[in-house]
Length: 159
Ligand SMILES: CC(C)(COP(=O)(O)OP(=O)(O)OC[C@H]1O[C@@H](n2cnc3c(N)ncnc32)[C@H](O)[C@@H]1OP(=O)(O)O)[C@@H](O)C(=O)NCCC(=O)NCCS
Image (cartoon, rainbow, N blue to C red; front, side, top):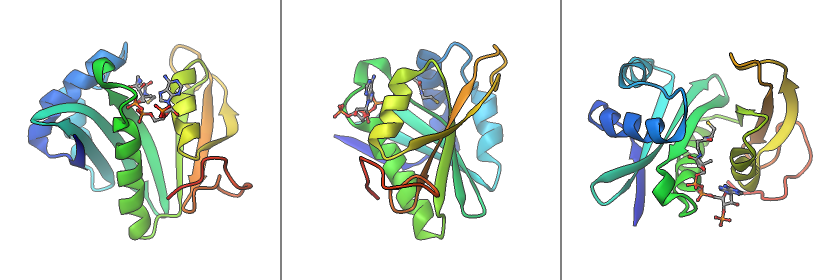
């Protein structure tokens, strides 16, 4: 069974290990530690038994939740871990007044875009050359009622 919870400092080595399986330039353990010290940081971990299989890092600024990074161990994908992480952080933040969630995702990362779309996020813009490599980012948003912020009803409305 997959369980999600707020992460603590002790979770960081396993979280960094998951990041290393998912990204060519992953956040390092010291970077996660630095992030965790910020009051606006929200770091969640997904566990199966004693093992961490995924994480989600976000920041809460005013009434917005900015999703910064999410990854799941390649061997445990398509089991609902990322969905559970995303819904947990959004539920928690919406309960304390957040109204919208936003994120940037690589234009080439179609799997992540499909994941976010399945959770009710909608692409509302493009940030040219957002990444160091020169790649564009898509800007995706979801409102507190599972709709794109300022837009029409999303197909996969939830939350
Ligand atoms: C994107 C990622 C986090 C999804 O994690 P996951 O745990 O496999 O996702 P879930 O199992 O919660 O998927 C929920 C839904 O999202 C959609 N989805 C997820 N992965 C998908 C894929 N590769 N292709 C198409 N749709 C996908 C599906 O609708 C899925 O539901 P289904 O399995 O019932 O069809 C994972 O693929 C990953 O770690 N990728 C590498 C890191 C990354 O790109 N992160 C995002 C940018 S920061």
